[in-house]
Length: 97
Image 1: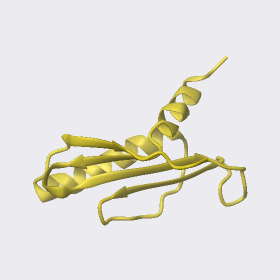
Image 2: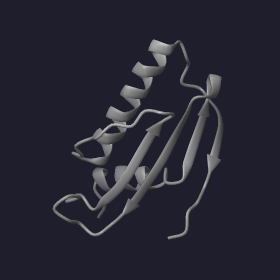
Image 3: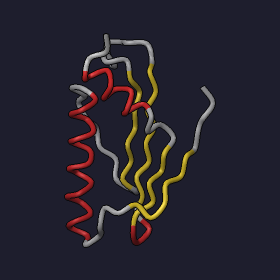
């Protein structure tokens, strides 16, 4: 039986290869893959969420917290710049597995 965290993880993995184009040339890029769990990645995920030109390290807790924290930060940065969160286009770039 799948737990709620499993559904959140599957939801997170479905974002892999997406680029959300926002107003005024801003964009969000998502790269998420399941990998072998290691000391560096005990959660078994390799991920990179990029807000246009901004990259920061992040300590992973769980998929739901990662999504909440990322979108909270995106909203904060865009609000400072006077840009809305509306995606004007979504691009799917599926990479080879």
